[in-house]
Length: 91
Image (cartoon, rainbow, N blue to C red; front, side, top):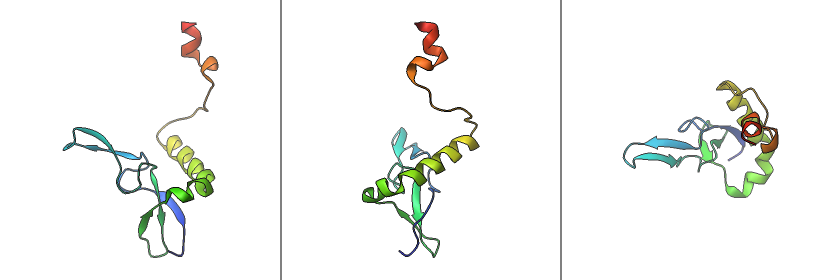
């Protein structure tokens, strides 16, 4: 595999899981192994990212995940539990 372009998994659309009616719920995506992204080679064929590459691809995976979250409407940043409004109301 010459190119290691990281792209969103077409099978699960980046979620890392799919609804499996036969198994009666959500199951880990078999194409990406549950991370939501795959390598696309220079011929356009997708390959699972090996676990040994996770550390080297961490920044790319994080950037792609932030982009995906923004696409589905997420606009905030992660907050520490003690900074979350819902927890302040309970406390």
